[in-house]
Amino acid sequence: MAAIEKRTASDGSTSYRVKIRLRGHPVQSATFASLTKAKQWATQTEAAIREGRYFQTAEAKRHTLAEAIERYERDTLPNLKSAAHRRLHYAWWKDRLGALTLADLTSAAINDALHELTKERQLGPQSVAHYRQSLSSVLTQAANVWQWIEQSPMHRVPKPTLPRGRVRYLSDNERTRLLEACKASANADLYLAVLLALTTGGRQAETMGATWAQIDLSRATLQLEETKNGSRRALHLTAPVLALLKERAKVRHLHSPLLFPSRVNPKQPVDLRQPWEKALQVAGVEGFHWHDLRHTFASYAAMNGASLPELAALMGHRTLAMVQRYAHLSPAHTAKLAEKVAAQMVRA
Image (cartoon, rainbow, N blue to C red):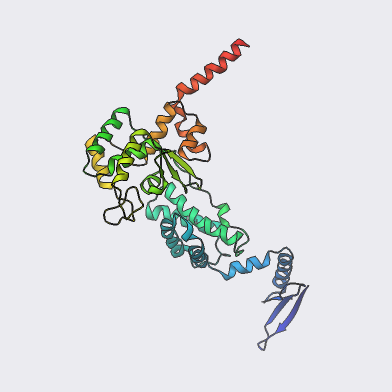
């Protein structure tokens, strides 16, 4: 029940002190200059306490966004692969909105900050989406785990519209020239690294960070225990790659578990940026990035009749949405299916 007490100060001013006592809950009190506001607060607060909402609101007023980010960085971030990138995102969020309490952190404030980020750093939609997702992770934890807020304000912050996925793959001629340039490179790692990526469709981090413990030469597989989407996956090692790996195994670095260790720091993967760029120049291949080796693998698979579910399995995608971009590359395969369906209809 709420009790309102009228008070008169020595200067003659009047105030109204509200006390709310509900069994099983601590006493809540506040003072107002207006009786109307006192009654409004009493009604709203009592209802919020009965519904279990009030104390979450109180927590939201007690903690700032900076505190929430720092707790997330301490408790959760060290376990994430994207920790380094997210720390950069969180530094920006703390500088921009960190002083706000979680109660004052509105969807509008976050939207405005993202618009400023786009102009300030001239970032594309994908990069802005990463900043948004980093903050969303913190606020989801604050709502669902710490119960510092009742609901994350991110549900009213629209995601940036992302451009259609880029698909650049090597033509037969380009592929031949590039592999020849990589084989002729002074870097001993380049040819095998490129061939491995090109024939497995593995992501750069998956192939360049691979260890010998993941390689099974007898089964011709590279086992990925932790992938981008969190699932296990095995990459098939083709005969040319397998032969090169068997040769490499004879002279592998004794003090590094990595397939491609750096000469400077064997605990880190080798940096192939310079030899890779030089090979592209020698081969005359333009507008091509390392990740496009993965696109090339998927594109060739599609053109050789792989269905979308098969592509998703090969690429390690949980849904078909990410491989939909390759659908146009398999018209011959879909045409055969259409002919089979038509043949059955005609016979019937």
